[in-house]
Image 1 (spheres, one colour):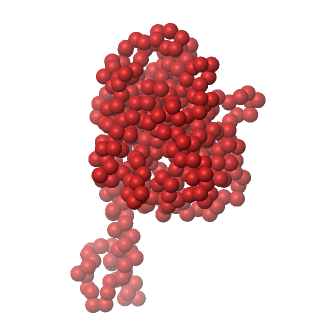
Image 2 (cartoon, rainbow, N blue to C red; image 1 turned 30 degrees about the horizontal axis):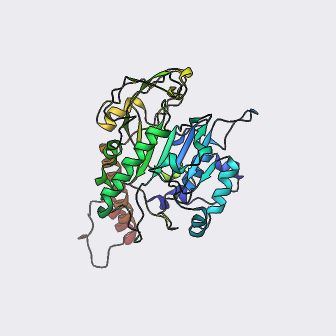
Length: 371
């Protein structure tokens, strides 16, 4: 079913408190965990950022200590533009702020360090890193509203290359950082080949051809092992997991269907941290996609690493495979056909030309007609 017709979207409004309803998105949903630093990029009406905030910020334990969780939600537009286009965005902004998130405007996905406020990315003269950097439905906006079409494909592919290059080089946590991009899988969007294009822009400090054991020094001159970024796999998008997220076009309050979309996950080739003392090179959180599933999902080796590292939680998210997609589509078609046949009534004089007399639904309707 399309997302808006699924049962979870037709439930009556909850009468529970906001804190209770916000807790519906559990810690660990889509790889977001408490204690993480998360950066969302180009988030239309900021509802995806709110969904993430409810996961990593709203369920903090009352220990009296300052939480390490951090969310920076960004938009390419101005605050005034967002308020003018999206009717309910002020409520979203208010809740984000109340949860402790930071909202930034005029942020360019291809120039993150240059356009993010210095207070957000700097600490003691060192760049703050993010465990997750997310850009949903990356593309340029055009006046006709038909963003992401073939005539703008090459430009959009370059946007993705530039975004991943700058995000990985400048802001992605060296231990367990991941880049997530939500993208449609039907034509023309599947022609982007985003799993390949995203890595084509990596060069300089982090090159896609670097081996997994290249030695480098961090900002303090300490020797670290640098790992290359790779495509980990994709996970089917389910809006039910991320309330109150609604996919919307840039500067357009209308939503769009995304039932064919998947989260494309990119992370470091090695899945094992080097120890708590190594700062940004330490792995604390499990990969969004289970390490043992990456080979079948991406068509190659995951680059090594154990998913049972001490201190890391096994998420066990099932990745997308071609057979899975085909089986789901087949079951949806069979289910739709059965429902259509059950609801249909043969026209007068039609004795079976449109229905199979051997079909159990047809036999049931025939018996009812005789009564």
